[in-house]
Image (cartoon, one colour):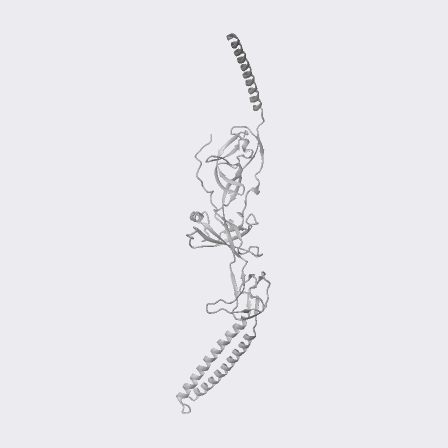
Amino acid sequence: MRCRRFLCSGALLATSLTGLAAGLSGGCDRTEAAAQLPPPPVTVSKPLRREVIEWDEYTGHLEAPETANVEARVSGFIEKTDFQEGAIVRKDTVLFMIDDRPFKADYDSKWADVERAQSQADLAKIHLNRFEKVRGSKAISEDDFDIAKASDEQAQAQLASAKAAFRISELNLEWTRVLAPISGRVSRKEVTEGNLVNAGGGGVAGTLLTTIVSIDPIYCYVDVDERSILKYQDLARQKKRVSARDARIPVFLQLENETNFPHEGVVDFVDNRLDTGTGTLRARGVFPNPDGRLTPGSFGRVRVAGSGRYQATLIPDSAVGADQDLRFVMLVGPDDTVVMRPVTLGALFGSLRAVEGIGPDDRVIINGIQRARPGAKVDVHVEQIPDSAYTLTAPGSPTTQALPEMTAPTTQPISRTVQ
């Protein structure tokens, strides 16, 4: 029995050794096959070197620089409304006509009072001139002369009062024609023909007839957070950015259905204090709006320069790898060997990232980075980074060219190295 168990154990051992030998032989074959695989393909490109400006974005709302409530200045019945609701009107355009017959009658009455006062003043002047010629003789007494002089002064005062009343009557008649006080887009008619409107006075507003808002130019108000305000102040002190209080810096606007911030304006106002409730400072951009496309009350995104102009090295943001707090890119050396290079990241411009730590002639892997291994060979395909990936939000415009030039913003250098 013992011999039989020994023989069985020996057979099992022989079988195991045979399998191990076969496994080792198969492993060697797979290693040789892996060694014969071609280098993985990658796409490389040289970095772009471009002049850039860092941009800060905020949400704002549009407001009209001028808003006018058109109210009745005299009481009466609306006789005619002579404008199209929602249309563009020019200043001094007739909007409403109030029944002017009572005002014409009062105008004529006040003019008659002026004529009568003028006649009395002329007569008093004639009497005074006659008394002055015989003054000092026994023809008149001093009392008669004083009475004539007082009568002349009284007549002149009555004439002035009549003229003042006439001017008021003239204004009332003029105000029966309600004119547009400003140019802009008119709202709906709050009062229609045949209705009675009341004039304002004594602290009471007159009947509101309609409203007008100006449309060209137009304002965009934004609330800037305190951190950004402090950053702008530091840049201004370092002469790296113009302060909005000292010059009209450029600002760009886009509506909800727009891209690339097509509307260019300038910052023309910065408030004098921060709002303690929100920790923000209100600023305002002014934009041309000749076609009236920008509507008061709309929301928009604004972009303002957060730095001066400087030269930056740009690569696709997707080409940047991360290992905990380390940021790196994969480069391809002259012998097509992959090299890992740590970089310092800057701002994002479209899909391109500003980086420090690589040169203009380095070949950066922009596609296939997941197949690249440091020290391994790769099959290199060269491709140019398209300029369309670079968001050119008007660094070449005249307003942004007026911004000062500066060196690239310095960031904390990376202390960790890669072997």
